[in-house]
Structure formats: structure tokens, C-alpha cells
Image (cartoon, rainbow, N blue to C red; front, top):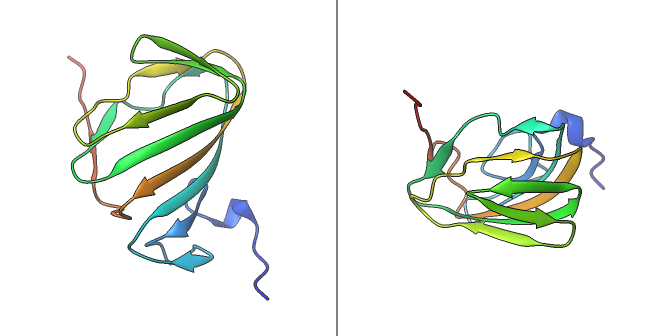
Length: 109
């Protein structure tokens, strides 16, 4: 039996191609994330991976659309995620494939 705490994982990613994960795989990634009210930490997109998000608590605005608890939003490759958390929020995120270096930060000018 493995015993591990989410705080020991990379930014909430507990399954994926990470040494700190409970299951190391290149097939997909799974994260449990907690966010404080405020803007997303960075605007970015994935070149290869698709990211599936389930908002399990709170609310947010993503690319101009408001989401609430129970809503899904999906980022396909090259779709930039721009948004803000409207209150304390929690998400479960699945990304496939697991490609930790796929994230491309978008610089705002």
C-alpha cells in the first residue's frame, strides 16, 4: 500500500509522468488543485495535451465564460487559458497525454 499526501506532489498532480506521483505514467495526468480568489497564475496553452477540468467547488471565469461547481471546461491543444477564480475554488484536472514540458506560457505585452 502506498501512503502519500497531495502536498508531496507537483502542484497537485498526483498521477502522471512525475517522480513524485503515486502512479508514474506517460498516458495521462490527474491533479487535485485548490485556488484562491484572483487571476489565474499564468496564461498558457498545451501544444500536445488536452486538459479536462471539473470544477468541484467555487466558480471562475475562463475565456469569458462563467463556470460554477459541477461544470466541466476543456482546453484542447493551442487554446490559451485566460481567467480568474471568483472565490476559493477546487478542481480535478485530467490531462492526456502526460507531457510535463508541454506547457507554453503566453507573455502579455
